[in-house]
Amino acid sequence: MLLALAIGALVVPLVLGHDEGWSAWCWALLGAGVVLFAAFVLVERAVAAKGGHPLIQPRVLPAPGLAPAAGAIFLVMTGVAGFSFAVALALHLQAGLGASALRSGLTVAPTMLGFGVAGLWWRRLPQRLHGPLPLLALVVGATAFAVVGLLARDGHAVSWTQRAALLVVGVAGGCAYSPLFARALGSVAPEHAADASGVMVTVLQLGQVVGVAALGALFLSRVHYPAPGPAASGAALAVTLGAVALLMLGAAVLVRTVRGARG
Image 1 (tube, rainbow, N blue to C red):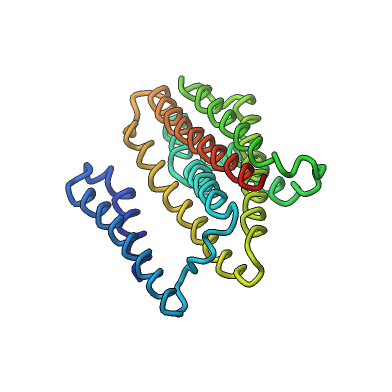
Image 2: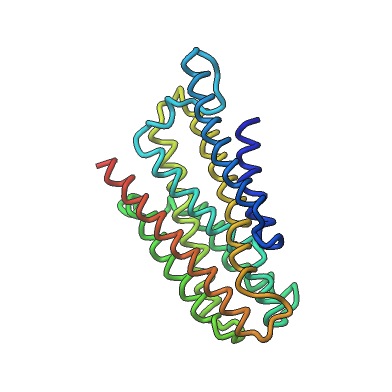
């Protein structure tokens, strides 16, 4: 219950804050979310100390590399979900550039295809590439996001260069997410696997929610539709994708920490 309240208190202001002009209640609710999350951590520790069954077992978190990998996955899913499911790209394509819903969907399709295929087939790469793969994928993905944003900032129609970069974004995301998930769970003792899996699923879902809310709010704070022209929409998308690129680089830093922890 505390975790659900904490997440709700943090997410609701992110979703509604822009429309409400970031009123005082938005900031108050964000503060309450932080307090509730801290209370949740204290309650979980108290339950575990008494021999109970907390929602998240504290003994799972110290597993080598789990916390950095979970943090990296959170940042990856925040960026990917904010890019894929938030209103930013769809609004830019349809309201900013006048594309149809079908054309807008087909524009994003290479990203989704690349993510799915890479996530399923990355193990077929040579074994020597498995270790550095997440780090390389995140750096490449950050670069591809930046390229898409830079090409969109002037409001021009989507080029084949942008489409190619969108495919790279998907492939890089799949090559980062799946190995990181496997690496995080692989560092946990078998008897703690179920608890660790629950932690990772919670992190995954939280990252998606925060990504849609935060990056959607960032985009809508930069442009108001009907926009004065495609360039205004493109500039807003460029800022949003710049933020996504920074998230990918932040995840890369955490991945480097995981690699260092593993020796």
